[in-house]
Length: 71
Image 1 (cartoon, one colour):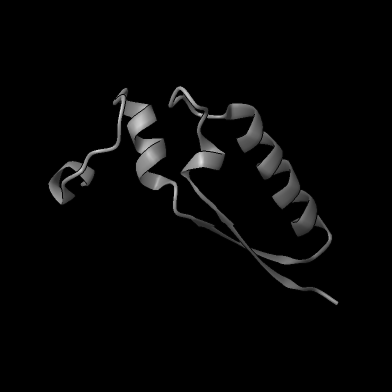
Image 2 (cartoon, one colour):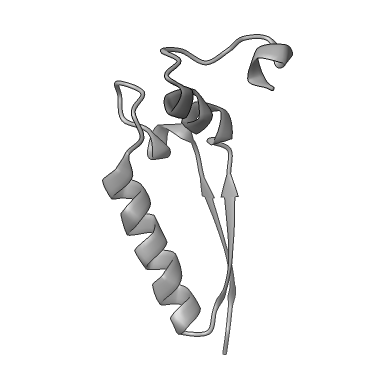
C-alpha cells in the first residue's frame, strides 16, 4: 500500500558548518527519495533551508537579517 511520506529538512542539514552546501548529504537524500518513489510511495519534501542554501550559492557568509535581504 503506497504511503504519503513528508520529509522536512532544514538549513543545518543542507549546509556544512562553513556555510557550503553539503553535497554528499543532498545526494543521499535524493537517492533515498528516488528509492521511496520507485516503491510507489508519494514523497513530499519540505525545505526550511531555502535561505541558508541560497546564501551559500551566492557566497554570503551569514544569513541576511532583513526581509529585503532574504528576498
